[in-house]
Image (cartoon, rainbow, N blue to C red; front, side):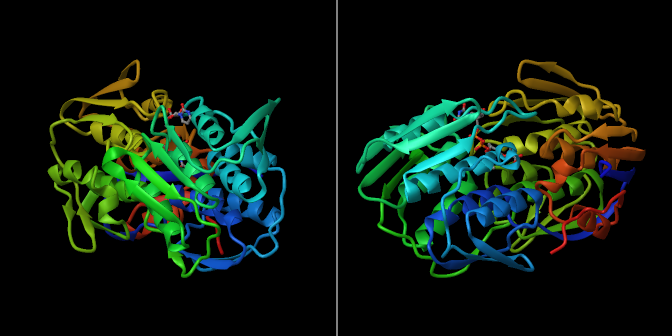
Length: 426
Ligand code: EPU
């Protein structure tokens, strides 16, 4: 099938209300916990996106039945069986590496393809492996496959992550929640998705104490988990930031954003409030910002500014007055998107892990390529403010994480068209 292209005609003048979908980066680890269970349970507000489909296909090949009702996902784990996790689609999806934790907990061994690097960097798994070693699991590499097996029965364990990796933190929590003894992990990631993952496991009987200020989690392993009630996946904070930025860039009138938990945006709300965004009881209101002094953004582990939103900030900085800077300390190579933005006329300088953008700049539509999901959404925002038509290729990257993208853009008044309209339907 020919590659899908998404075309936008700008400049756009947006207004209206948009509700964010469930969080991608929470839904994926939640699905990785499924092999810990032996019963039926329900997740609500699950985003119907390509990455979720890849996780579900894998669950299905393990014998887990699922069915959708709108965004409600019913799962039945009664017939779970062991499989090697080596399908090609899985190794492209980084979050699938979290199946290692639930497989080791459940079966004591796992075989998985090493996750590949991608546009945003090498993406090693050394912290995952070191942490799992502290829990008694050995990893052996055979080409691009990693074989894990339990070599020691570990009851109590303590491990310090050398960097607060989100994935490694989730891996260790999922691997430790069921079993025996007490596990303590230090220097963990405290991103909202980690907190929500802990809420889910706790609601199923997991005994997990999180001390976010100290970056510590303590786990009293329990003998089994049992889902008592449906778990609602909170709104995607990065999608929330996307619509706030759409409002700041082209909110002709107000854009009202619903469905994000305020606490999940507490690390960025100060910045956005200073740009005029209003955080009201059950909605966030954003509208066009004219003539703002340019910004200095540094992406850091939470509670720092989220790396997943930094490519979109480059588009905002192109409209600020004077020198703006973006530095990424999480993924220092996450700047490949700049060369695509430059095809729309964006000028920038780049040194080490920092880009300098002097605004305001005028952008003009052109053909561009979405090289990853966050690069892709930055191109969508740029296409909204650029004059003329912006055609974005490799839209599959956007399909990995943005549910109903065109539907939401159209409802806000954008002129947007896919040549294949591949939005997923239930
Ligand atoms: N790192 C290591 N060794 C490891 C693990 C990570 O050196 O064993 C390094 C990475 O190379 C990177 C840094 O630590 O430089 C942060 O990586 P982290 O492990 O925190 O990221 P992740 O768990 O692989 C998740 C999100 C990413 C998001 C990052 C940071 C999911 C599925 N992915 O990735 O989301 O950027 O945390 O917040 O939750 C996205 O949605 O576009 C995306 C890439």
